[in-house]
Length: 247
Ligand code: MG
Image (tube, rainbow, N blue to C red; front, side, top):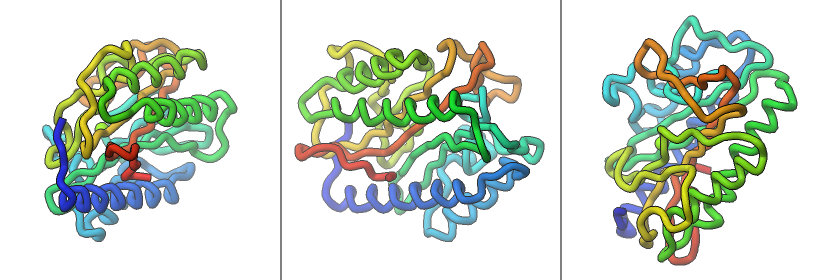
């Protein structure tokens, strides 16, 4: 778990702000009839115009600047002209930027037009599970306290947590140690150090926890075909508490 100095923290904050602003911008574009490729192009331009670089573009060969994952797709959806959003869908947008060598990473699930109460509740519980988690994220405590709190909140609400995909440390690299599962025991994981940055990202399935990888080698979907939601922020942990950098 990396410790950041004050100058690095300034850059992590700025990377986080651009990430947040880009996500908020994408949210304004979401409506029935728009394709996820259009969202991707607009997000890319916004990020570059903000003085940053889209970190997902070209990452291990990923072709987009955002991941756009509708309905039963959990994460890593490749933006496509053929993926056109329609009323009642939900769409998870994951987006990362690099600013002066430092990374921001965040995700939200948005409604497309009017959605069912069931889908709205899934979005709400996923977001709430992040906040339940960070109540338990403290310097000198096990990271597993956060992981356990997320899982407990999700399962109490009747949903399930994806196991194969986890949060991560973040800094000069988008993905760096430690792994941050959204499940586990309070005694799991390393002790949290001060002035570290973490990307915490519950992925919550309405039905069962099992997932498939689709044929494009990127998209991850629920095996039971039920919807999934995602909520992620990059946070800074100090001895005074948790500062959310992408909100
Ligand atoms: Mg992430």
